[in-house]
Amino acid sequence: MPKVRQKSLESHEIKQLVYRLQSIGQQFWYQHWHESMALPDKLTLDDHESVVRYLLLRALLNQQGDTGRVRKLVSRLLANLGPQLLYEPMEVAKQFDEVLTIFRQVGGEKGAEIYRVGALGGIKPLSLFLYRFAAFTFFVCRLQYKLCQIVEEKLKQGIKDLWVFFRDDPILEGGWVGNDPKAARMLTNWLAWMFSEVWNKIKVNLTETLMIVDGHVGKVFCRTGVMEEVSYESGRPFIILAKEMRSNIEILVKSIPQVAPMFVDEGAFQVAMNWCFEAKPNCQECPLQDICLAGRGSSDHLRWSAYQKFGSVPR
Image (cartoon, rainbow, N blue to C red; front, side, top):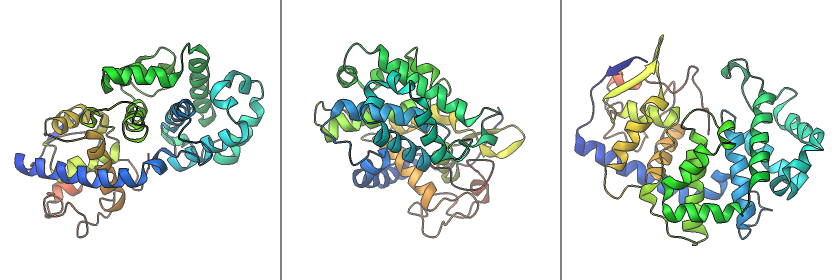
């Protein structure tokens, strides 16, 4: 894993930039959290248990997938199969032909419109879907208490306890990607938000939330000059390794007072989606332009890319 050191912002500038990212992310999240989680209109928010189970399935299936297609897939599965999908998935497995029909309707015959074949090292999209659906099924069948109750008890101990529970569960572990899966972090933030800000069941300190740091978020932290040391892929010196920098980025963000990491992460993602494009970043209109080193014209910071091919790869 090669690394390179680059010119970085001054410490006071880093703090200023992080606060600005938080403001962008917080504004977006308060306006669009329901849409970001892709909660179906027919799934009432008062049904806490169903919402928690739905979000778990959504997070599991979302990994390495096209977010728009995954949203459509999970929503359509729920619409066609009803509560049985969330509460009796083993019964659903007995009529799995219907599940596969929906999968192919949304993702094409081989599912390549949901999971891109070329990015998966030869693993078939259907194989990914099957083992993630199986992880959800076996996890739900093993539950001895309401998942909503388990989540609430974990959150009382702290957000980290909930994250570790999802990350290290012996069944769910088979459905996640990597040792520190982004999807488990995303799910933890979602549930912290729901229990604290939507349902008011337990007050959660959002400064304890997690950074997801996908390629787009990592790219923004590198291009702006927040990161002095950048990890990149061997043989592809302009493509960052976000997962290798996640810990350092999260530690840096959490060191700044009164910062909610989930909002900073969302803010960086929104900057990447709306201004800090892969090929032709729109620095002139970017809200970070006056403080970002790339926005000031430093070519060293414009070169960093999130993925091999230019283009948007949403969460």
